[in-house]
Image (cartoon, rainbow, N blue to C red):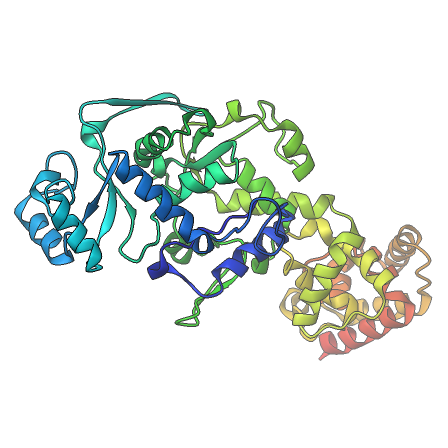
Length: 463
């Protein structure tokens, strides 16, 4: 199920929900139920479940597990200045303005007057909260170190702490996976499951290791990506307020299969040397016992390696729509799909990101606009010009092997070593020192186009 946790209206960002849906769709992860695909466990936005939260907050108050707190922001700020590292909890709650320190009539009067207030959990004194973490084993917390978290805010919306427990119960969630930064909040959630009488239905817990900065010091953030030149978002995100675009893996040229594969192996492996996994293989082989307790350093070069491997192993038919888009961005129109597939198969081993297909294949669709003349001119001669003119006359291009043999035979006849002529020939066809086998290129270009490119380049080199 896709549940949208939007209870903090101060942090609400227009378009963020659709962005999450788009990212999941790109990754090939389709929720069984979501705001767009309702089922038995809706509604799926926490903002649409508001009445259920206040009901349970009131239940906790009547059972003595929570209380109203009427402290104003100014009063809380004054207390923070008075007490270093102030926490609203066991040591301070009786100094504050709440239903534990006020009389019943005072509380009723404040509530009747609709005085702004929050609801806080009353964390017990001197207890140990235990739970089993599927990754970390037995975890325990002393309640004396846990503050009285807000459960219901002044606007009637729940905090994450109350909402996630109420919703996990209502939606029959079996496993709760979170980042390890949520560990300090775990005792609050364990107590809420207990206080609401749902302890037997509590999900199993797993706190995942973090993805770390490339140097291993601290959690990876968007700022790290901006600073070091790699994406940390799945897809491009445009800030609705500023218009600033944060680049994503998709737009940088990653395949979704490679992106999922890379993410899965940050902090997990199957115990073998296998590194490439399809989503189906990950479903079959995943085991929570193989998740590391330690954070995993993000390595962008390794991420690109995954993409390169997936491009190499992918079919031309599957790659073609994405490659076609990249070519169109560069102003190259593809008219023959079969030809495009042949080109992809010939060059995909040379491509790490999808935009690489433009440089590696553009010359198949348009004649080079520029030539690496400096790599040819120092050793160019009239005799070499004569060789290429003669070779162009003999072109048949039935296949790469026989054309290479004819090229070498003519070179020997003209008194050249074939190696002296291969680089000029490549630059004539593609414009630079790159690309697959030069005779494979010529066969795909066909006789007339190859002849035209030889003639154009010979004139250029002669001048």
